[in-house]
Structures are given as structure tokens and as C-alpha cells.
Image (cartoon, rainbow, N blue to C red; front, side):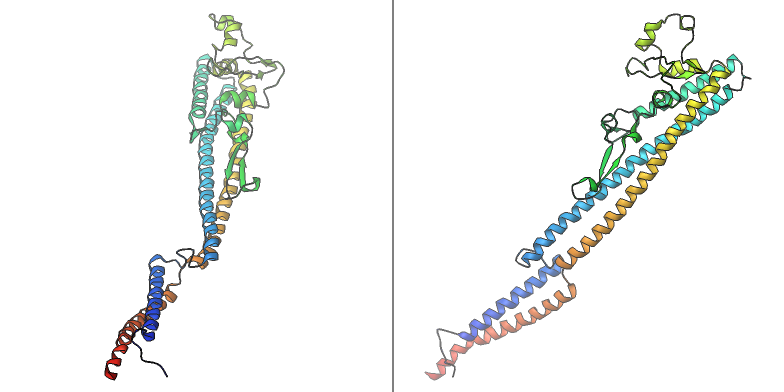
Amino acid sequence: MASITINTNLASLTAQRNLSAATTGMNTAMERLTTGFRINSGKDDAAGSSVSTLMEAQISGYDVAESNATMGLSLLDTAEGVLDVVNDYLQRIRDLTEQAANGTYGTSSMKAIRTEVQQRMLEINRLCEVIDFNGIKLLDGTSIAVTSQTGINLQVSNNAGKENIINLQYTLFESAKCSALLIDNNAHAGSGNTWYVRTDTNENTDALKSRITGTAVGKFDYSSKYPALNASDYAEGKLSCITAICDAVYTDDNTAREFLYFIDDSIENVSNRVALIGAYMNRVESAVTAISVQKENIVSANSSIKDADVATESSNYIKYQILQQSSATLLSTANQQPSIALNLI
């Protein structure tokens, strides 16, 4: 038989405990509904919180990797755009050179051809000197990627290790200037019968190594053609590489005809780069797709751990709200129970 007491009201204590529990449950459900997360602090699910934190780090890493790959695509696209222009210019130079090789053009016509070719070559050089991506020179051959022959690494995953990078080989970013395409990297620029001339006083590099019809380019009478120059002037760079090429090539149909081989090699060099860039772009795009799939899977797994089920939490909120109201009502009743003792006095 339950006792009637004044100092200790067990019914009230029970109602208070249930009211507190209902209030806590309702507040938890409300927090989850307003944040959308089942786990809002470690106390909600310590193990789940730890796993979710690691997954969120991976998700953030995949976001960065996707951004890295996208920047790599932009870099390749920038280089390809300039190489397309260079290829167009080389094709025009080839057309003009083929015209010069016909033997039906007089001195004035050859001079006109020479002038346009020279301007085209100068524009190729200018484009290669100015094009860059985020401060990286792409086609003048001076970038660390070329000088160190390490290429450019794209970090396309959120982990360390070589398997998580795509290396863009350095040959993509070698110089595409006329001295490089027509001389240094040209299969028809033989090592024998070569004649060196510096490109200009600023670049300070040996450039002209061509041979035309078995003799070295520039084997003309420089003393009569350039009275103010002598052999030492060439070595000091007072005659540019482009000027030397044009003066040596566009003199008669034979030298122009031989020079077609050099231009074809240059066009092949640029075309091979564009093809390789296209292959790399396909690979990087595949990496972006893979990153998206991996990130989607991690996000889905993290959602199952951390996100709140709105339907469940809505039901919990209503349940705890009813329990809270009923507990409050019963608490009021329980608090009145000790007053029954007055009827016994």
C-alpha cells in the first residue's frame, strides 16, 4: 500500500523525470529537423561522428582534385589554342614557300614572299613568348616543366603517391618558336655543314643549324649583303635567326624548295603536340568523371551516417511533444497529491 507523504512526492519526481526526458527528446528532434543532421555532436553518435569526419575530409579532397583536373584541362586548352594558330601560320608559310619554289617569281615577288614569311615567323615567336597560364610559360621553352624535363603534374586524387597524379610530359611545353621548330627540333637540321648564329642579343642561344641543299644556311656573302656586319657580328646576335633564315631561303627556287622539308617537320611537330594534348584532355576528363563517381559514393555513405531522416524525426517530435504536454499536466496533478493529507487532519 502506497503511503501518503508530504516531504517526498514520488509521483511528482516521476512526472518531472518523464517531463525532462520528453523535453530532451523533443529538443533533439527539433535540432535534427532544423539542421538536417542526425549527428550534430559527438554525443549523438561517437563512432558515427568519427567516421563522418573522415568521410568529409575525403569529400573535400575530391572537390580539390576535381578543381585541379579542371585547371589542367584549361591549361591544355590554352596551349592547344595557341598551337592551332601556330599551325595555321606554318601552313601559310608553307604555301608561300611552295610559291617561291616555282621559279616563276622575280626578285620583287620573292621579296614580298620573304616579307610576309618573316612577319608570320615573328608573330609565331611573339605568341609563344606571351602565352602563359597562371604564370607558367607554355610554349617558349623556359618553364621549369621543360628545363627540368619533369613536365607538369596534375593532382587528380586526394591521396599521395604517383598513382594519384597525371603527368603532362614536358615535350608539350617545349619552345614552339621558329628557332626551335625550324632548327633545334627539326629532323632536317643536320649536324654537318651547320652554321651558328644567335637568335638575338636578348635570348643568347644558338639557333641556326640548318642546311639548305647541302650547305649551311647563311653561306652567303655577308660582307656584300650586310656591309656593316662581319663574322663576329653574327656571333654577337646582330642578325636575328628569322632574318638569317629568310635571307638564306627566299633567294631562289632551289633553296625555297629544300626548305619545304623543314616546314613539314615543323608542322608535324605541332600536329603531334596537338594530338597528344587531345589524348591528355580525354584522360583528364575521364579522371574528372571518376572523381565525380567516387565523391558521389562517399557523399551517399556519409549521408546515411550523418543525415537525419525527416519522416522519423517529425514523428519523434510529435511524440515527444505529446509526452511533454501530458507529463506537464500530470506533474501538476502530482504536485497536488500531498494536499490530500489535509483531509486526514
